[in-house]
Length: 70
Image 1 (cartoon, one colour):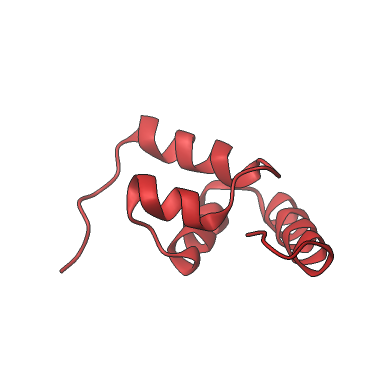
Image 2 (tube, rainbow, N blue to C red):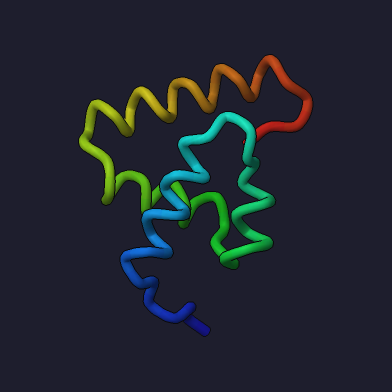
């Protein structure tokens, strides 16, 4: 079963949530039903390549420093 296509407002909300250092992938999944891999794919499509790489680097770095993070 594939999820319904996302409208522009929902995509922008998900991107904003994912860019926040205070919102975990689990919270995005609870609100929008997207798995972490789907959020990463959405972010790759919506952000410039350099912005995406910087976001992934920050998420990985913070994930190793905190017990519960994206």
